[in-house]
Length: 592
Figure 1 (cartoon, helix red, strand yellow):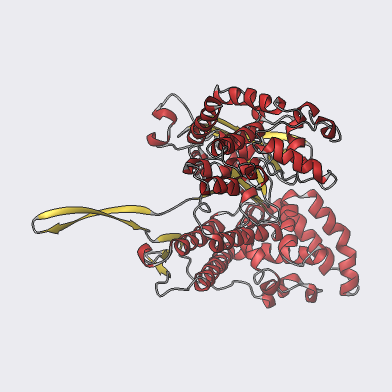
Figure 2 (cartoon, one colour):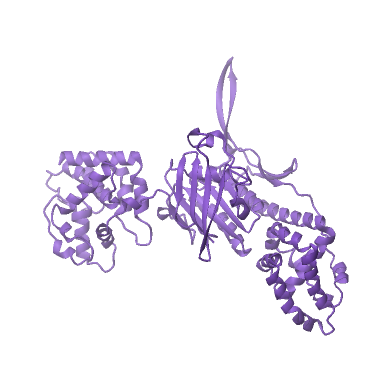
């Protein structure tokens, strides 16, 4: 199943948002948008709907604080070629999403605590970052197993040696234990009289069989298969057993029969035992993870206190920011592991990654990957949505092997024309003539003050406007696109990158153009060294010009294996960056 579209309305800064890109199961879905876009509004919408029958919004989370603007979340799903929609609104009992998905939101738990100190009759207010104890889950008391295979065998009858010991095959399986909460919807249905009788009939066929046990197992194989085909709850329980153990066919049936027999006679005891096993798995996993991160003298503690399993974090001032954030993420993901019990889950991670250093960013990805791998191995689906302002295309430490990157700043209306893409792409194209690559770089992508004409050579690259090889033609195209950009019309993003770079270089060159060796400026490769060369000869280059390199360098070094345009548009849309670019280009045009 794929989430084809996600719509959020009237939550915090979002009036209406529709994400039309596929959100894929069991893969990291990285949703990238600049600060101020509304990423936290997306997380808030899901947080206010998780474990609720409707969206429960505080006034501060309403769009424009307007009670008349009602919140909604809508998912469009696609599975096996058919589409469906699920939604939740503020209307009571409207949460269709909850029926099909568990939802959990991971967000920053840090807060600022203010206190005052007295100094000689004067008080001074101070603020300190604190992290309250993190409640992972309710404490589960130790419970004994109600399973006694000797008693089960006596109840089974003949061929009892065929019974697998579910104390090993089920109760010692980490994956089965983690999925055990799902089993009860099927177990409770199957122990009702009509369906239980159908199950018992198959068991009796085996126990009444007069031949060998092996022949008896073959004898009931067809009946077992028919049972799983005709009873949906039996099929559902079988799917969990097969996904989490090595059991299948008749052996799986015999394990399920034992579990149902236990549920009929000791349901509460069995449920308590499975809950304790699951709780123990979560607790041990978290304990191991905290120990792995124990690299300082101040360590977190894992405690059972006041009826809860709690992580008490060290004073944030006594550990590094990166260690603090990773400890937080580890704890919060274990809350998710405990709370997410359905076969499908949506996990929202809100900007937890954005301020980690390289090593801790890798650790955070490891934790996310582990969670996703657990879901895949257990036969479950998790839709992990990571909200961030960091573009994975330009951060080498985003190393998820199968990440699905979605840019929320929609740049469709601002796509570059094919001719511009091919011009920039030719610079890194293996089959392109090296001399032509140098001409494109020297005369078009960088500033050049002299005359040139290589239009005939440009014709060798299909799809490029060969007229750009004539002096002034490319500059005219760039001026036109800049006019669109500065007046808020759809524009060519790569053209804006080019006109920005050329303008910065021209402003530097104009200050040293009368010097005897000025032409060496054009033989210097890359903008940074060009600017440094001019500065050494007396040019004054504002820091702003150096800062803008991150914009045009990304755009003018084309990578065919990544989405180049949309990330650039997101940066060009930033009002401060736009102001910087407009000032630079206007200054250049004015001086020209």
